[in-house]
Length: 161
Image 1 (tube, rainbow, N blue to C red):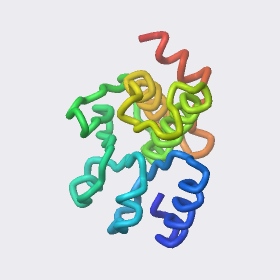
Image 2: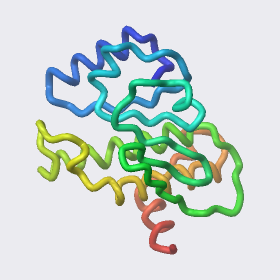
Image 3: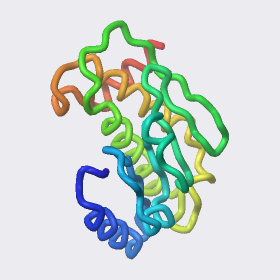
Image 4: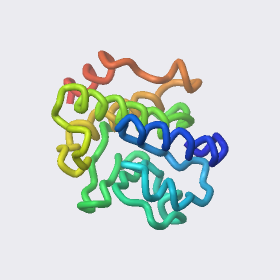
């Protein structure tokens, strides 16, 4: 994410590219994105305000708060689980991006997504559904790290829907 200097993101991206690792960038806090990152990041996950200010990103999933997220490559909104009470939204985007990255990584490990395959070959619907649910749970709790739900909690929430 953009909480580290741009040079760190570029170096991490180069290391990932050398090992055929997928690269996801949550461009928060908002700042201009270098051409190198625009050309080499596989998936961007800005929120709706950050997305309006950034141009040139490809493969973008925009987080849109209580409405879930939107894949810009097909202009599709993926609704989230409705929750009764929001306690703290800090960390919701990071939770979303982290779950998204972990689930994409699982698909790579399982062989469903090959090293040279574009993310567009992967059906992201279920992955996005789980990431949305995780972020929904995260905002119902206080303090960022203790608020991040585990897999069982997320799946229990989804199974109740």
